[in-house]
Image 1 (cartoon, rainbow, N blue to C red):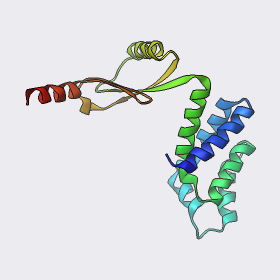
Image 2: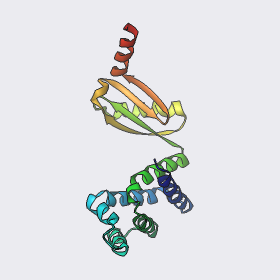
Image 3: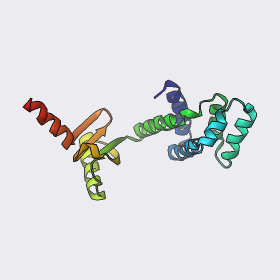
Image 4: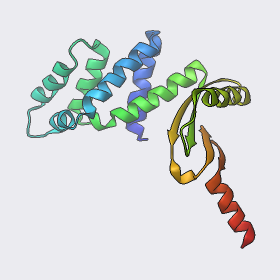
Length: 173
């Protein structure tokens, strides 16, 4: 993550915290990310052949109804040709908001889909282990063959079949 994205994310987060509306500001920032995820919008906003005033007006027109804060952020990023930082800004904002709320994010990687019950059991176990609320994101990766891999911050719990086979192969050679 770039230091610029962290600075923008930090500033936006501090404003949201001062306004005591972390979720509302987060939703607006996510909406801004969605707007600029459109390749045509992103290219137009960064096109040096278009006058700056047109690029800013385009962005602000697409954000009709958004708060002044998110419109100001969009204007600033368009003026500085930094709209590509938006996904990183959102990711850093989420990290700060989670820390503020005492929430830890966990990524669960499985070879096959897991049901809600198993996901809740994993979430409860992780909550007990880390002593805080845990939000989980589950994704599939067939390359792990079976089992699961859990990432929580810098901690990795790898109980995948692939890893067990690699360990067995190392032990046999």
